[in-house]
Length: 334
Ligand code: URA
Image (cartoon, rainbow, N blue to C red; front, top):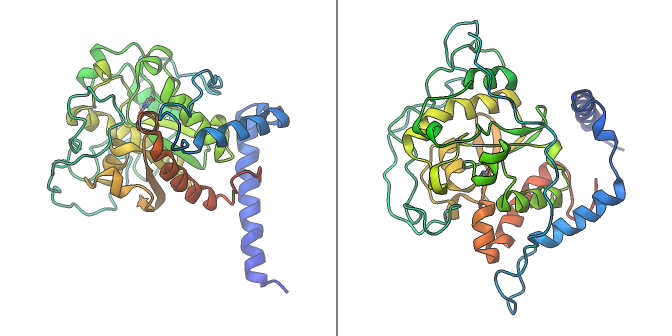
């Protein structure tokens, strides 16, 4: 006999899942129903294969399939409108729930970078703005205590000139995916392809991320994908502290709007920025953390995995922990 309280809880979860699903259907105009199951299964199998660590005897660069096409994004990048003045009091969108902590000491580390090896500070801890208070300043136009919408946040971002990245960018890369996603991936910043297309993770690292998402039993349009900085750092260099500080209120507001069940922080910039923790990603990864009451799993950035395919096994272990939260099994479609 099952425990009636457990059954009630289960029923509650089913109802919540159904509610989210219906909202998602509504927002995708029913597109989500038009899924070719065989194609999805094939994609899933290919993705699982792509996530497997390379066989030791083979060349380390072998496991990626560069020809794999990235699926078209489901949500077009928002245009860059001149922002109408938003109403409401100019107070923080982020509840100040975490006490101020003193800046963590920075130490050199051999931490993996998601940027190419030529990147200036790739061997060092990132310059997370540790001097700043744990939560950045107010995002005007969002009323405290109210859940903003992604559209509201995008309007507030406008044709952003808040940091020097605006001078070199072609497009602002705000974020893409299901506005009601339960699973959110946060990367570092747009690369060349992302800058050109205005969509996150559509270049080589994006192809791998798409395979990772599919291997987890999701599609790109079921989840939400965004970055710490919304404009491409020139030459794909690391984002600098002032750039992270300028963009951070928007990321935090996006997460407040989304209120996901799980955040996957891809690489040190996402993990260290959201957690205000300068621990190297090699030690952060694989351990559940909490961001504003939301479960957060730090893992390696896909660009790092492309350069270090032997680390894919660890990333896959991290993602499997996330899958458990959603009741998903590797190789199954449940
Ligand atoms: N790397 C990132 O961190 N984000 C992107 O959007 C693309 C590559």
